[in-house]
Length: 311
Image 1 (spheres, one colour):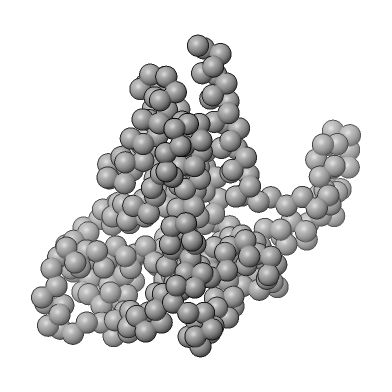
Image 2 (image 1 turned 90 degrees about the vertical axis):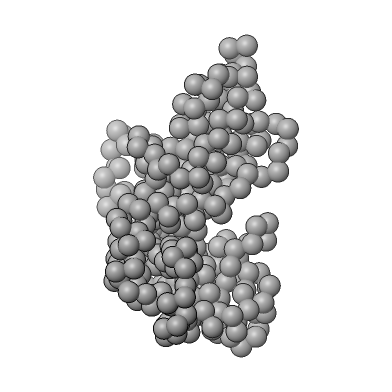
C-alpha cells in the first residue's frame, strides 16, 4: 500500500513540534506532497485538512497552508480534549458557542467526512452539552447551513483585472480551491433549492455581475452562472467519495486503475473501442485539478465566443 495521509501528516507534525517548521513557514503544497510521496492529490489535500483540524496549520491567501504557533495549537487541542471550565461555559454567549460548534463541525467533516457528523460527536469536540447544540442548531439542515456559510466565507474573488473573462476564471478557480479544502461542501450545496446564506448569495452576486459586464442580460447571466457553478460542483462531488475509497482500500485512484489494466486491455481489445485502447497503459492519469481547470476555460471561452457571435 502507498503512504497514507495520516502517515504524511505525522511526519509534518513531528517537524512542526520539533521546531523544524516554524510558525509562518509554508507547508509543502499539495503538488509538492504528491511529487515527494508519490500519492494522489486527494491524499495530499487530506494531509492539510488533518493538520488544520489539529490547529497546527492554517490557509493563508496567496501563500498556501502555513504553520500556526505550536503553543497555540497545543492550547486549542487542550481545550477540545478537556473543555473549558464550568464557569467559562456558563458565561459563554450563545453566539460564541454557535461559532465554536460550527468550527468544530467543519473540522470533523473535513477530516472524517460529513457522514461522521452527529450531535454527540460535535458536542464531545467542543465540550458542550448536546442539548445546547440542539437548541442553537435544531436541525441538521441548520447546522450544515452554518458550516457552508463558514466555508464559503473563505472564498473571495481575485483582484479585478477589468476583463470579465479572466475575472470569471480566477473567481471560479478560487471556488474550486475552497471545495478542495472542504470536500463535503459541494454535495451539500443545492441548485434547485439553494441555501439562502450570505456566502452563497455573495458568490452568485459576483458571478452575475461579472457576466453582465460582457453585455448579456441578468437572466442569461443567472443561467450561465448556474452552468459554471455546476461544473465546479459536479467535479468537486467526486472528491469526498474518492477520499473515503482511498481510506478503505489503502489505494489511490491511480493505483486502483493500474491494478485493472489487464482487464481494461481485454475489454477494449476490439475495434469498437480503439479510442479507449489507445489510452490503456499510455501513462495517462486523471488529475481532477487539471480536468476542472481545462473544463472551466473551455466553458468560459465558449461563452465568450457565443457572446461575440451574437453582437
